[in-house]
Image (cartoon, rainbow over all chains, first blue to last red; front, side, top):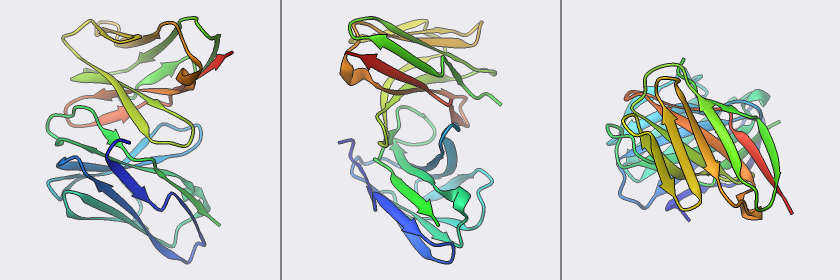
Length: 114
Length: 109
């Protein structure tokens, strides 16, 4: 148990659905991250929040919309996704972004887009 | 890109043997980290080595860093079945951290 939880663990959605992924960390960290992990590809950093402010958006399509209401919670809102968006979505946190020490990862949400 | 690339992509060894994985990258870094991922789970941080360090140990893990060759290695000694997982290096260049594709390690009984 790393102190980072993600819900749901599995999600199947159609291309017209709207859903949200939730991440919560209980470590008192100030930086939170969303990653996408697809088969046979490197882990892709999607978004970074530091002290609730978005500091990185790595050219992620607008059908992915992050939200960070406080330092402990991070959401990824999904709408009109494509089948190629099917992947494992991982949330991580670290003490802060300036000193990038170890990142603590959640177990991930396995997303399937039909 | 400073993407770290692990080598080999996959490795199978007998339990008790040592496993060595390598990581190469392209640009200057602040530190390099190794992570382990069990199937379908999140990544777990193993060890961090800073750019001014050459070697670091943690239990059965030994990490080396050669900044002149822009490469790092992860050695797992006396492997166990529980070491079966994917191993990733992550390079951190102050403003960005990038993960490689990983090495899949399989420990045979």
